[in-house]
Length: 396
Image 1 (cartoon, one colour):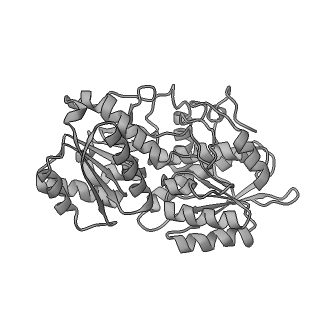
Image 2: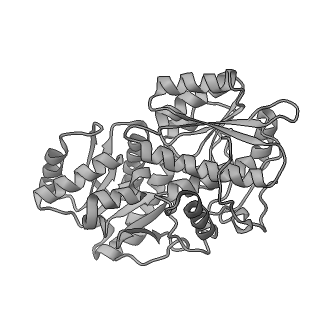
């Protein structure tokens, strides 16, 4: 059943259990087989597992509505060559006609390449790198925000919102952008730099670093010497933790620290960093703690997640993956051509999805009605503080 402007699927409830057997086939009345490619081990395991949980809840809800059975084949992939091989196996041997992923742009790029060449469909639920939708693929889609959306939000926050909070005008800000030298963080950082400069914000430094870099203390000292008063960091959980250690060792803290990307809303990051994370901001996917008027499905989703896994959602990533997969799975047919026709025709205003998004594809397969929010960590919770329509709290 397609989503409508009058009925949020989240309000119909979510099942407590998971499918007895995970994934999608394509002939007769047989099951539809779905492939799920996520990093379930290695440094991105938390993110991969969280996204996969959202996908599973969406499949479970669609299954409860009847119709053709769904079966999810969930695969652990940690690097592009493996993602390419596993995507080919899922399509050719397991007969999966629709693949979901990935939280990692290199994995998504490889999986979507395999899907396109083997006449299957691919849906990216989280990774932000702009390159994912810039290769002219007709049957690859992204339901989540792209890097340029993070840049747009960052510029809006630094011109319209944070100056009042910091008690200084936007033209007094000296911004540094640190980023991991990998696809999504680099794409987000590049977009932020462009948008901030266009807005008249001074970008004093933009520095790339390797994953798990030992150079964080030296970079922090460099930024301190450059008079930076606002630091943006786009990287994974491990390097975010390293940043806070380096700041503590340097006995220095800029007026504001803003994370960017999927790791910065994780409750595990709060546990690893401790009280030092409170007061920090993040450009992130909408967390559970977002205004109900903007994200009406947050509470029902959190309750379903709690029933299934015995703990609250670890970030808004599972919520975003659930909402994106739900919109795709709601289409009458998941066959490649029919799915494309349905998704191209789908037009849902912002606010129609459980997490506040809507749906409208551009010519590249990008959902143009998905956008990040600015959250702030307060008392070990990520709370949306901007834009105003999504905010559940005032900045502390």
